[in-house]
Structure formats: structure tokens, C-alpha cells
Length: 517
Image (cartoon, rainbow, N blue to C red; front, side, top):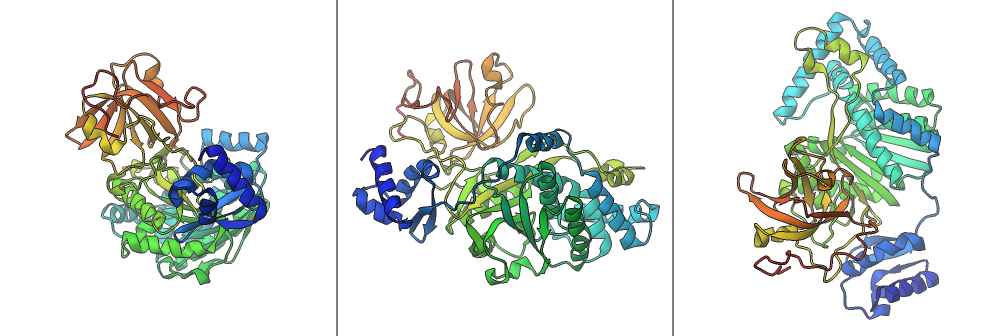
């Protein structure tokens, strides 16, 4: 049955019933493909028909997409936010709130020498605990003040980047119900307040959960005051005092549009990957049907890899990975070695950070670089990139690269890093959603011409076709390199030149062995 016939059957069923199961459509079609494959074939057409799809046990439910629309940002608001990202830093009004809180908490000026020394000690202790992979305690005042001084500025701008992506992808609504789990002193709510205030549109109700009494106090001092300073676009609900590791869904508000786990799941060290996934899946009951879950963790190897494993386990429990992962072959990946993260421009140090950095070893108190691992998950099975490799297309799966060592082949994969090399040899992590070894696209130092910058344009998570790359095995790192050559063709999926492409051979003519894929 043709794609046109499938879409026509979908339209007929949607016109007759506001909601129906995919298995019913499968019967209408008399189709032999699995429900999972049929769902993948339908996803690219759902938005234009005003429909949404969500898992329901072993089946799927298709229904009309809720009418609220997406948050629209005018050109002036968009330019203000982009200007902020060009020169990012903690806005003055938020710095003043933090400084005032420090002064109130310590009964001394915020930049008093004794106060600064105690904050330095707290920061050094936190860093030591972090690198020893031990849980950091925030039961006393100075660890929280140290967090506000050292970690919070980066995390604030970091979440603004994530929220801006959510807005840009049409996942934000004009009015949002946002739940931040393990909020600490309220960094995520502060980021929401700041961004909504800057773009001049959108409103939100903020709910948050926190167990630490000291964080609780800081939150109540900072977040409501920030909301008032930015015109009360964001309504701050009463903070919920609870341990997220012991939360039940019934304890939380419902119809949540954005549920955030920012630098939280990795701190649940007493819980296994499966237990963390069970927790998120259970709390996801409080999401709106078109709600989004955000999971963010630090970019270091241990935390970033554990986060990808957790996200994969959550997906096994019925939610869908919206981004950055694209399972373009319809297979389950193996995230055991999946170390991938985003990097954004450095922030400007705050006044407090600069004062802490005065004196010997001051660099130890400057924290300005933004690197993080994140994922968005959805209940309605929508994905950022619905592309699947067409049947019969001659691309090699990355999990089959051992069959093509030292040959030129065609592949299609998502770009999962910025340049990890240097200005001479450029290295990019790539993934196609198959359970493959680590794979990198490599632009060698000797390459000249347009291909030298061919991988600079696509954004993190975007899918590209690579025609005529040379497969090399890196024994030292147990990884495969896809070497870009002068004759390699690089095409972002969806580009006019790329539509309908990909029907050539997997291996380039002249290689000794057929593809076998």
C-alpha cells in the first residue's frame, strides 16, 4: 500500500472519530507492517493534520492535538534573547538578589572577607566531593551560598539555552505549567523568569520540589522576588518540601507542560539506572498529553553516560526521546559508551565570582564554561526528526562498520557533538541509533576545499548523509572513524538536493565486497 493510501486512511479515521487506536487503522489498511513501523510512517504527517500520537501499552492512541498553539515570539523579543546569548551572563537584578540574600543570611556585607573565605572553602569542598562521585550535602548555609556563587550562574544560562530550544521547536505553550524537581535554590525557575521577561511574551505557573531546608530558604528569598522584578509573567506556587527519590505522582500537580530534572538524577546515587527510570516514568503520569520532560546532567564522562543510559531506560517504559537522539533505523541503541554533550559560549563572571577569584589560586573560583548532556522526552511520541532510512536505500548501518573497514561507503547519521578535535583535524561524534561502537566523522588536517567546513553548519542532533567516506578503525580507542575525503558529499537530511537521494550503493564502486546491509 502506498504512503498516499495510508495518509488517506488516517484522514478518514480521524474525521470519523476524535480518538482511536493505531491497531484499528492497521485493520482498515490490512497492512502487514508492525504497529511500531506504521507509527513511524505516520509521524511526519501528523502535525499537518492536527493530530498527535502517544503509546498505550503495546498499542498507540491517535487523537486531535490540543488547540493551545505554540508560544510565539516576535522579532524584537527574539533579537533580545539572541543578544543575551551573544554576551551571556547573570543579569544585574539577579546578581543583586543573590548579594542581598548573602548579606541577610550572614549579617555581613556580601563581599566581607570572612564571608568570601567561607564560601571559598565550601566551593572547594563541593568540587572535591563531586570528583570523588560522592553526594554533595546542602544542609548548612555556606554550601548553598557557595553553590549560588560558583554553580548557579552557569546553570542559569545553561537552562535558558535549553528553554530557548524548547520554544524554537514549538514545544512551549503561551501559558506553561512547569515543574522543577530538585530545584535547589531555584535556578531553573530563575531561568524561566528571566527568559520570559526578556522576550516579553508567555506566562507560566512554576511548581518546584526541594528537600533541603537551606535551599528552601534561598528559593523563597530569590524566586518570588525575581518574578516580581520581571513583571510577574511567572506565577510562583508554594514550594513543595519532599525528597524526589520518594515522591509519588499523586503528590504533584497535574497537567504539567514541562517537567524538569536538572542535575538531579545523577545525585540519586543510591538508585540504579532502572530505579531512576521507574521514578521518571511514574512521575510522568502528571504530564499533560503533549507535555515534555527535560533531563540535564553535567558533561563529564560518568554523569553524561549514565544520563544516556537512564534516558534509554525511560524510553523502554513508554516515553519517546524527542531529541537529541534519532533512531533512524528504528532500532534500540546501546548507550553504555555514549559520551555526548553540548557546549555553548562562556558566560561573563559575576561580581561575586570576581571577588572570590582575587588572590592566590583565584582561577579555582571562576566557573564560566557551559557544557551539558541533556534530552527531551515526550508522552505523545513526537520526535524532533521523524526521518527513517527508506526501504532499499543503500546506506551502511554504523553497527555494521566492521564489514566495511578500509572501504568507502555511504552512511546517514545524526551529528552528536561540535568539533572535538582542533582547527587542524576536526572530529565529530555521529550516531544512527543502532547499537554501534563509538563512531566519529573525521576531517583530516590535510583536507582542503569546501568539505573542510561541511560539518560546521548542521546543529547538534541534526541528521546528515555522508556519501563516500572512508572507514578506518581506531584500535587505541576501540572506535571507528569515517574519514571525509575530497570527493565525499555531505548533505543535511531535508535539503533540496538530498530529497529522494540515497539509492546508490552502500559501498562505493570498486570496493571488493557487497554491503550486506
